[in-house]
Length: 212
Image (cartoon, rainbow, N blue to C red):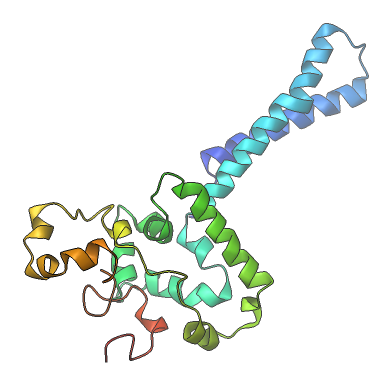
């Protein structure tokens, strides 16, 4: 998926090619600066480069929503392998097999769904990049990473409820949900926990965290 040319990527390449062609033609032909030539230069120096910059940014942003991008750092390789394992029973792996969220499973489940969710999610991603290249993760073994790194905050149940409604009878009529309704609303009890629907990435947890 990551190697496929996206519409944004095609637009970026096309705009950059046109801009380069306009500038190359001007440098070779050296025409008189008539209004028409000036307009072509405006297109080649400003308009098409701007389109190429915006489109390439959009293409890059789309790329960051793919699981293969999330698993490109060696400390996340096991997460990606688990997602791609058709026999895995982990919560994340089971969700990744959904045709609805599978292509963007990591982003769909970890994105912040508040009003500023998209930029905040990307800023969080930049913190991951910082920790990987400047915070030492790049030199850590998988064993050390799994043993020491945890999410910065408890996984929000609201993220689960973007797909699994917390107001329909299929949710409210379950006795466990009723007895823990306040805790679930306050995120004191996580849907993605050993006592509920299971942790997302069980291979990263200690036996105690798995409730064993």
